[in-house]
Amino acid sequence: MQQGQWKDDNSKLKCEQIIDILYYWAKGDLAKDLGQECRIANVAVTDWRNFCRDVYAEYYVAQNIKLGGPNRIVEIDESAFVRRKYNVGHRVKTQWVFGALERDTRRCFLVAVEDRSADTLLGIIQDRILPGTTIISYLWRSYNTLNQLGYRHLTVNHSINFVDPATFATTNHIECLWKHVKNRNKRENGTARNLLQTHLIEFMWRYEFKDEIFQKLLEQIRHHAFETLQSISVYEA
Image (cartoon, rainbow, N blue to C red):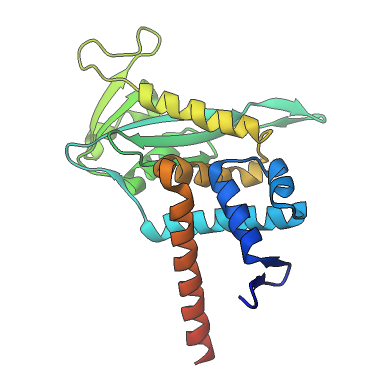
């Protein structure tokens, strides 16, 4: 930072412009509007959007957040984001996303997956959801062994009802989450497959921190800058 400007290899922006980008981005403005609001080139907006997503991703990697635990309820589900279709003469696979939402908190995770097999989904569950958790899902064969893996597994049969009459199990919360994710994806005019995971991470951040997105973003940028300076110091030493 020199003389009120941020310098990097690609741009030289005033601090006020950068704060404007971060603020409007945190507020949820679309990329196409940011350039006009901040009066900067679209390429600079794209650079800073990508930087923000890197910051979000760094946060979740560092935190290694795991959902659930004893007396906690986590709803799980999968949803198709890109349907199978024929595209320019070849078949395009359906792109599935696996999600989990912890009740009573705003913590969740969303992961783009190759398939919905037991090997794929159970591996993610064991890595990201703590033993002792009550897991609620709809009836899907890939989840059949969850009770044997240290979880209490409740199911709901969506072909009959949305709330199990015996256990009161429901996946309404994560169904609502999918609605929010897809609405945002629609506002962005869809997402390329290779960028889907970064958009999912951004949504996780926005959903978890909701009313303090801008503040948390600045805090994480400060942490990011500190870690970068430390690594440079170690390297130079």
